[in-house]
View: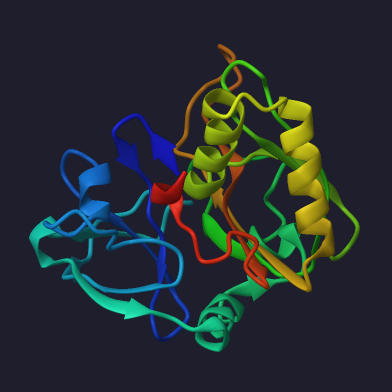
Length: 232
């Protein structure tokens, strides 16, 4: 998930537990690359971190401190390995991911004792919204129980693809979104990584809320054809 010069990165360890590496100053985009400039952290990547426990504020219980100098690349997962990793932390309904605490299909109250990250395996993409000015996609989808959700999609690769298509190539944003919807509706299997944003008060007096986002979109076959965020 991009945020200026920072990104939010999530990994899955061998036990199927989601981990969100954090550090002082934020997870900067430069940490995604090797010193030589090649991509180190991306979907399918095997990466080694030195991780340390940190006091977490629910629902962001996946936070762990890391030393940026400790990051080591270990290659990429093949399709079987990658899908197996996703399935270790997958659910068929969004309600199941958040223990029934999700309100209005869009937010969880700050401090709620639930997880902030999960993978949705039974999902159908209904539509995508793109703004022609900023090209920030929103994903409209249904989970395995037929519940409908409308969330911002903060997947860095998808963001870069949309931005490059509309802003650099001059394509119509409606054409781009139709192309993506068709792709997502015709893949064999699709997984969404869902996450809750850090708490903030959108409207004065309503209290801090952690808003639902789509932080990763993964398909089999791969709709990106092995490309990553640097390829757009």
